Length: 442
Image (cartoon, rainbow, N blue to C red; front, side):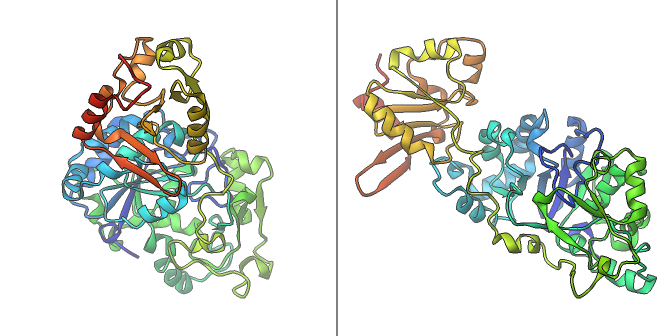
């Protein structure tokens, strides 16, 4: 076992609400009658408690972007000294998801290498991810995304070692070699800090006594100090050679006594018959020749070939385009005709070309895109303009003046190549002076 101080990541579980109900979920999503949502004061305390921890702070769920205060949490992280110190060192934000991505998975996999960053996000890419895309990419350089619509396999977690007849000596060795505790993370939930993320959610599921106080230095505890939290290991089968199943299966593998406990707490999944109960007297329930416990952090993705996002998943892509003439922008916005992207240009052919270009690319809703110097593309939910739209106020003619300079992107598309450029302030001024942006005229 490891002390949390030796871990590369410590998580903050801000909610266990999730649109998915995967098989053998580490957060036991689907078993809770009512999900939790961490309050902001607890979140502040959790972040501050990790001062001095040299690894990454992770934001996770459930699906964290479902949290009603997700944006508030993210903005707090941006201003926290932990992030600001990293930002001063790397200055990464200037280049983070500004230009369109035609291969979003490749983009994300590259950024998963940056585990030395201050903060990271774990998400299953629900519709709430798209709603928060701007603040996500302003905050998290590293994102661990998995839509679970792939061939990833989840190992059974609710098969107790005593029911399976694992003796104390064998159990002690297996527990101390648990792949989750040794390769994943400690975590903080609304009920306190825990040495293991699965133990934390067993405590949540079975209404335990909670974790350690969320206070500075809690993460420096050694395994000898884990104490009562180790009792949760008795109900967890992560370190045992037990069955696995595709996450999309939706059913959980359990032993009889734990199944009865799930029924006793009113588990929705158990009540719907989504539990596969393994009889301990059946040798196949823990057959070392058929089942092998995972050993490494990403082994569950092996069969999926690390293809974390299903090719048919268009969650992050533009939803709709509303085209208008330059003098119609405010009419379109006030009327509510536009609910996603707006394309502004007086050239219908160019509008069609731009729509085809953006349709199959992941683009940042917080950016203002200048396409071929003649067309503007912007999203009605961009932080730069949404207060105007919410309050039904007219946007100024020079709309680019509302956007940060690093979020104004010029796209020049040639016959055989494509340049996507983040302009300097001087080049933007030159555009305005030369009136090369034809669709914005005084």
